[in-house]
Image 1 (cartoon, rainbow, N blue to C red):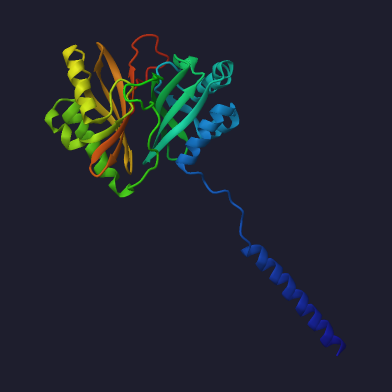
Image 2: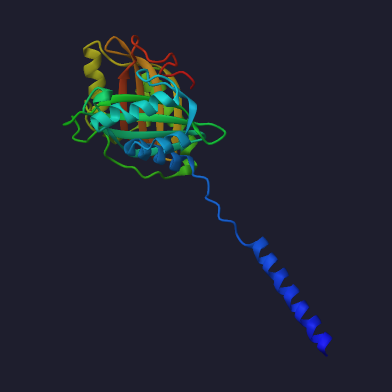
Length: 294
């Protein structure tokens, strides 16, 4: 009986040890999930506002390719801008809209205390490309000074923000391309009624609401021999009901970057925001070009 009790005690001890080992093997491992590209983009903008160099360096490649013509290429020059010029001016960014298309994120932003960008308040479209390792590898943008009041009464950034109808992304991207090719490139300008809703909401500060607002603006610019001309569509980024196009063209006798954001509904454009920036040709901080890499 004595030996039986000892054997029983040993068996119970062994079972306890085995059970503990099994629990350790099967216990869940705490792993922080990988952030999505949108989450990383939001974290990047937040880090810019907070001058958080550690976070910026964790998200951005050292050999970050810069297409803003006033900023040297590479991560370190951008970090230096954030920690010196942005600090001196109190520059802050507010994200209004964000689209994801493959490894590209497009953001619609409002910058304040933005003297480094040429005005106290500016509106930008920024595009980030993520590489295969999930790092921000490349950046494009266009910048326009804030204007208000506007002809339509809308601001340059207000309006709808909700992304819907993800199953219509490709159709809406095609619609945006056709709109630009037919109307703005002049291939079939009479097709404008096929693409633009009658009650179109306009955020370009110089154009009134509605299809009529566009037609009036085109007529006025044409009478002044100053109609903007789109020559090349370089990039189309879409998510659901929103599509951003990046085009190159001429206006005011200069080469310009045209960033146009459309909101689509029922097969037509119902709302529009844009940023137009002349393309600088002198004093460039890098040789990557505003449209290079697309």
